[in-house]
Image 1: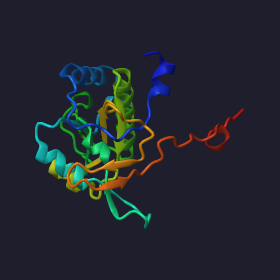
Image 2: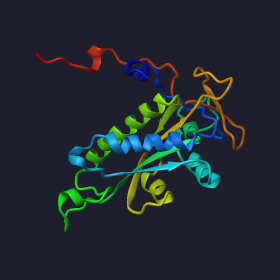
Image 3: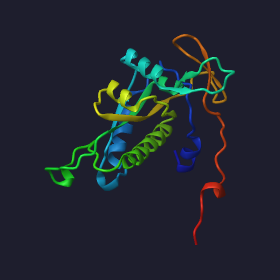
Image 4: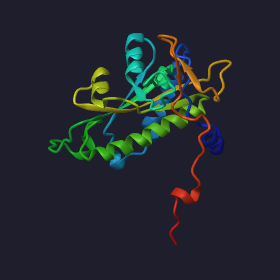
Length: 218
């Protein structure tokens, strides 16, 4: 895609078909591209990216049921709603070590991937670089994307996917829009119990005006 087509085609989507099969070559291309081109502060990568398909349905269903958001709309019968983007056919998770490492026995250029030497905020903006890189890469391949950060306990999710003393703070689902679906669909049917949920975001939520959060300095 051309750049303008890419950025204007990307939008948040979260009504995926979990049974869709994403070709391995597409996932591998995104992984190779991110390793080859991703920016990072001083060449450090203080986080890990994990890629989940549906080869382990039990694990993916646990993640779907665990990642919820609190609904304060009393007209909705569910106070805790699952995040449908967690059902995406491919899910990326972003995990940061909890502890800062201060003593090093090797030169800086040999520091291991996932080593955190700075504040957690540095790791978060590094994850931001990677997450948007993957979102645009997925859009370029024709997929829809949906972020999820409604995670009740970052440490518990990290431990569940195999990390001790770490924080899994963001996920990104990718897939195509199911046949017959439109982005204007506002409700979600849970595949586990058939319950209907309201989506947590407005599908066409307006963007801010330039003057409201961008300032020019002369």
